[in-house]
Image (tube, one colour):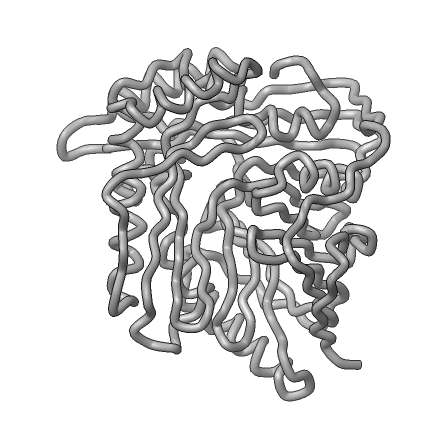
Length: 389
């Protein structure tokens, strides 16, 4: 048996996707389908970055004794008490990026119950509490998440949902990872946490959002208003400063544009800044950089330690792998990691969807609840659910 690393002109690797033996990751650069299980990285979490990196390196080194080009794939959680899910696959296939072939019919999915956790009123109370903690010398920003749990689900095939995600958001980081126990983490993230390709490093932090609108003129105006919003520009600057500060010690050169640009998905406008750099040492892997940056203020807040503590006190939600990182890192250190947002955890009879919003001065409970509802639309549309939750 050997690791197969194969490049193919066939854009549709989704044809061979198997939910419980595959890892799928499509970026604007390429599509990756990893299958089989050669090794599992021993239990570790992102809070203990040294142990995480040591165990991944040891697992890859062991695999390299028998196989030429091993890589680690999988997901890192948000909370430090949740173990990462990282494996070394048996085979890896590559294809260029591209739009997935659409399905002829939307999925026929049904469910018996939809529970919002926390309830909308409780979420808004949490936002009010968070606003009281903001101020000079205190919290600059805190991200509060909520989820929707669908119970009694029927007809939710992960492969079908993944194809719809890939088709609906052709420029997103589309992913699917086996979480064991019949669960699959899948999503279409707009945000690159970090990429390493040789000595070149890039990150594309997003912060500041507004929903897309059906009318083209109104939609364009909404994007332009976001780009001029003082509140959103301040929120974005906090995230960019944190990501740049995290990367700078590892780079001999780092370029940070002075102003953000607009990034659009099928459902949202975002402010984004493309940060690029050149590594000072070839020993710094993409996973190392991901562990340093995670979690960014885009999914946690700032300062990080205060925001983490406040999330634990206010949020009352088990995020699992939501707002973590998902991607791959090969034995040379190259790799890509996306921020795990616009995602859902799919199990045989239930689906949990997640969304969050950044609370900064100027936020209101009503607007942040509306933002999370808009972000949930990425997955709700894929599920064929056309009512707001």
